[in-house]
Length: 125
Length: 191
Image 1 (cartoon, each protein chain N blue to C red):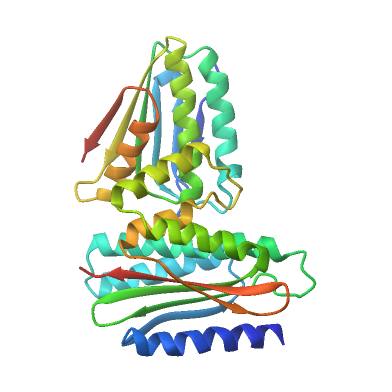
Image 2: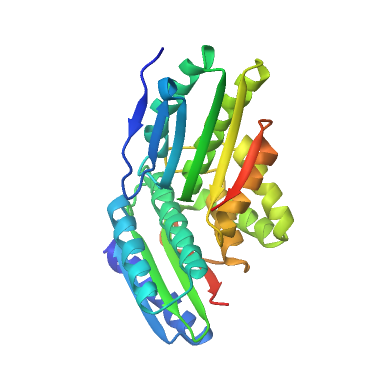
């Protein structure tokens, strides 16, 4: 099994935990990195590698309270890897959390769920 | 010399803007290089101020979004003029102001003149769309658009328009034969 990814949250980058041995996948916090591609590239590379031999069910929890447009495209790239996994008969689910009064994050979740074909749950907290 | 020119052009614009929009308070004004550090400092400072003034979290989030995307636009455009013979590199102007009811964010930066028509086309199109169409355009651009390390694909402008809910206003002033100063003004109603 491949090693896990653990990135601590900073003021401008999210916490990322991709931990297959505990079957836990989460992106949370804020995302406005100085260079979005630089930040997300290793995460995408990891996920690509993982996607060849994933767990029986991959549940990705996304609990962001802010992301900039440069991050939005890369978040879509992450979700598209899950879509590919689903196309290859792997089980995935995306759980998109948004704060009760946060219409922006709710709408963002709705848009992503329109864009990709993966079981998608929008969860208010 | 170049700095002075940009300063004059920006101040000419904002003094008219103050009158036209009945600006009562300047929250922040900045002229200089726009870096990631600057973005972080501005957003933190404005967030604190708005919290102290008891503004709603919805409004704070809108202002936060628009500051980030406006500043990102400035630094993105800065790359397009690197190869012009005039040295307008890395210069941007930024203002946050408030009228009785609305917040305003004004961002100015030099662009290559070849970009002007494209920007006008993009903003006019965004301004012609309603909420649903903007959401559709946003999705389309996310899926099809090209991204550089600084963002791109017009996503920033689409987001600014969506968050503000108002038409974007823009203005161009000539700086040299090759370079224009592009000023984007966003109005954010405080509801």
